[in-house]
Amino acid sequence: MLYHIRGKFDAAHALMLPYESKCRYLHGHTYRVSITLEVNDQDVFDGKLNMGIDFARIKGVLDAVLAVRDHALFLSNAGKVEFFGEREPQPGWRLTQGEPTAEYLAQDIYKALACEMGQLSKEGPEIILVAVTLGETDDQGVTYYPNVAFGIASLEQVVAGAQSK
Image (cartoon, rainbow, N blue to C red):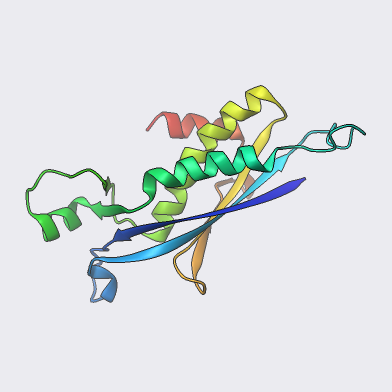
């Protein structure tokens, strides 16, 4: 069974692109996040709970992951130097490896959530994080779903990759 949970956060970034773009200037978005989860629990329809996951529990995990990113300033090292010189990073700054694009942020959120879903799976049915969709506006966004040979990566692969960083 597939589940969908949504959240949002506000953050700023600038992209040091190799061409002229208005994205080069500091600007912000209200990012809209939607996650897709799969529960392979044959006991969902057990005649008792008839529930694979508790929406409130998953929403709490998503909200906690997004809270760390809320009102943050995402900058690459090049962006930091461009706007702030050699000044030490301040609370709320999140320096990224490469440019903090929508693609980067979606993957970053996916990795954080994958670790959390691994923990929740130890307490109940296995929860597979299928995808994270991140919208910069109502009209555009990106969906990150890691795939291996055209298939969804196992939760163990994602968690192992996230923990090795």
